[in-house]
Image 1 (tube, rainbow, N blue to C red):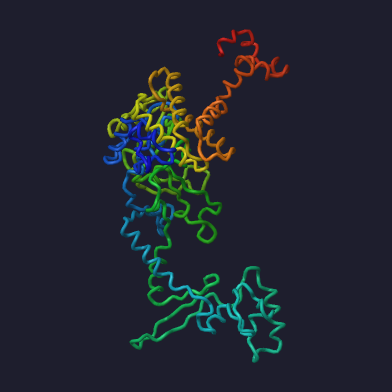
Image 2: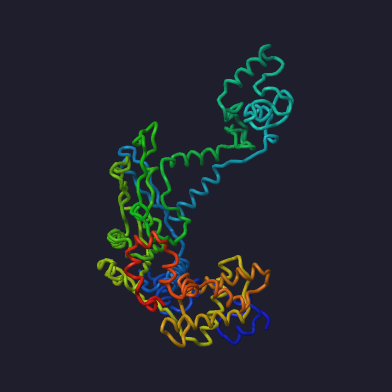
Length: 506
């Protein structure tokens, strides 16, 4: 059967040559296997801006749901900036710009660039004064070349009317120049007459191997930008709406003010507004803040709760010994959707007020660990294999016979999870099996992953505990073989367990 097929029917999937002929859905949420309820609620969360708590074991697609949700959100519409406060530098101002304001400024910036010209395309006297043209031989080189690379004479020479000691003086000047200093001027001012008879100032300045020409319009735009020079973009308009804050420290989560060894001194140090850094809660403004294993954040959960309630959170310096400790920016926006995840046993370690906030403005979802073994879900398994191949980028596609081997493995793992007649949704480890089989195909220069490669990869990707049991007969026998005599004498664990029945560890 020719043409690509959607993963809707197992009968149609069985007719394709490989997983390369399977259509991958454009909506990232439709790429998540199983988890129908979680996907449905995630789509609601994207539209209604609801929080989610995903509960279940690792590898069941919780982070994938969070990423997919972020791709269903509209683009951010605000940019957050920190502006210098001349009256009180330690209390910088906050400025929030909408999309039109940022685009207007980008337009001004583009117009302020002027024209970039080749040195050969400007007046010779201007190129000479900027250090591009050697007046001795008339050839062009970079201003960094204080000696002309063509005639080996100094570009500082002034020609036939120069001082008779010019060569000697220019050589002394070159020797006295600090490294990196170039010949000529950085900028040259001139004028030109417009068609209406008025004169316009034109500035030529160095721009690497080019010369930048700035007319009155470009200079006006540059002056407008210079008025905004005392500000820093804290959160960009064009940003990724998905922010991963798993395991974040206090400063990573809440923002900070960097230390300045000069204490923010006006001449030596960095101004306070330049040292303000955004936290994950601020970077996730208008987007998704994803925190896996949220219970591990401990007391930091209460700050997340405050940010969710207020939709703004101050940025302060967290180190009392730092010069940033006295700096504070009030009311920094952080209107995010929280998608948190944890295992069942960690539920009790999530703060009750935080869970209440999630329930009051979102949903708690127990993710599935298996889905029914039926033709539709077998087709979804084929889609999963195609997605894993695409995401990896280093392995070939799989034959349909290889997909059937993956389905058999998924059925076996679901049965081991006390779910008969089902396919496992613990897909992270199953993805590892596909990659291991893909590595075999690459090493054998095979065009496709075959069923035999899946079976071979299954042997290679066994947990190390299984490998220990196969080699030594039991886990404890493996431990006893690996522990040296001196370690045995010191190991309380060894003496307490050496006479236990090995069956306990099988």
